[in-house]
Structures are given as C-alpha cells and as structure tokens.
Length: 109
Image 1 (tube, rainbow, N blue to C red):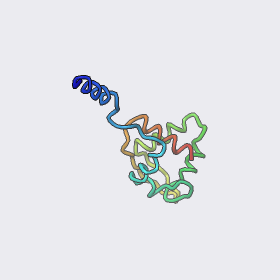
Image 2: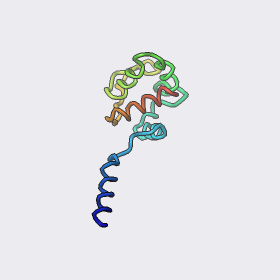
Image 3: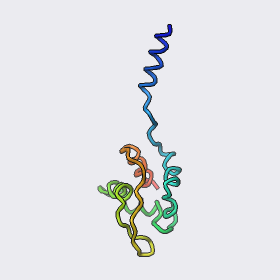
Image 4: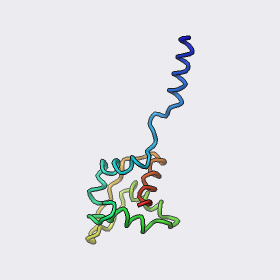
C-alpha cells in the first residue's frame, strides 16, 4: 500500500512541470513588475508608444512578432515619442513560450 502511494506521488511530481507557463492573464502584472508601464500604457502615449500603437504597427506583418521580440530581449536603441533615443530595457523572461505569450498579448491590444 505504501509503495503504491509513494509511486503515485512520485509519478504526479514528475509529471508536473517545475513551473507553469505564463498565461495571457499573467502578462500585464508581469509587465508592470518589470517596469514596462513606466514608459508604455495600453492605450495612451507615455514616454514610449502605447501597446495599442505598437500592435497596430506590427499586427499582420510577417516580421511583426520578431521585431517585438527583439525589442524585448536585446536592449536595442529605440526612438521615444519626444524624438530622443535610449536603450530599451530587456525583460527577464528567457522561456520561448512565455516570450511568445507576451508578444501575442502586445499584438492583441
């Protein structure tokens, strides 16, 4: 009996991922925690363009997702709304699935 219970627990433990993948509802709180909302808002311009403006620029374009991903992960120089340039902050995500979730969230604004 004990060995059956132990085997069941071990199977459940091994079948459960170490952490759950980011869901659509996790993205906005994550971006706030990362400080992205200091420069961006969902539907109004701040220091950087709104997520709605970013989505309209890249949605439906073959390289749109790739360009957003590059801004999120490589710290490129970006032009701000006032015409100045600065290095874009790199987000802390490394998981490709989570990065795709964030990119899709931005494109869906």
